[in-house]
Image 1 (cartoon, rainbow, N blue to C red):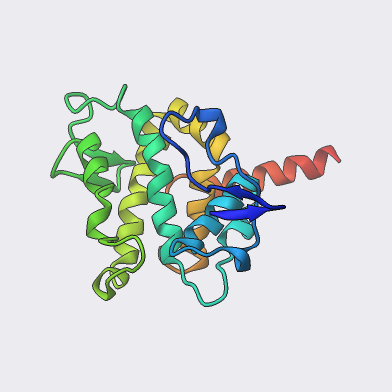
Image 2 (tube, rainbow, N blue to C red):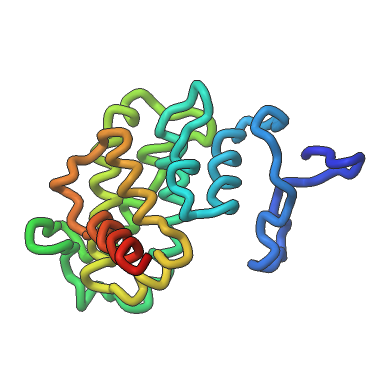
Length: 206
């Protein structure tokens, strides 16, 4: 809880809060927060301020690393997962596929997503992350990116609808490259190529 001009502000969505009123509280300077989740709240505040401002969002507070961003990506990716459940049926997509080079034979695509979203394996606590989990961040990012790629090539309408609002795949793509968690050769969804084409188009129009 913080105080703004003498009025207490509870930074928490109460039960029954409408979707349009989520996180409807004033922005706050990072230095003024008194919370064990201050870094996560800082990232979420930057996302709400403008999800397309990728450089600002991905700039970690002093003394922090990339693990908090990965937590946030997992939280937001659940929104895309909810949309996919209406179309990504296990009897239709019996394997997780993301273009020809990525095929997971172990389970249907929707089950692969759910296993990946089991954040307990990466983030057993809200405050800290195990050293063994830090060493596996690259692998975790690869699994998460496969979900983006599958949605891009097999459920593009859902992907576009969610991406236009959240810029989540754009942010994640820039994230894994910024922190060298994935090779650019393994990024199959042509997000960066689309950005470059749009940039050239805007320059031509100008």
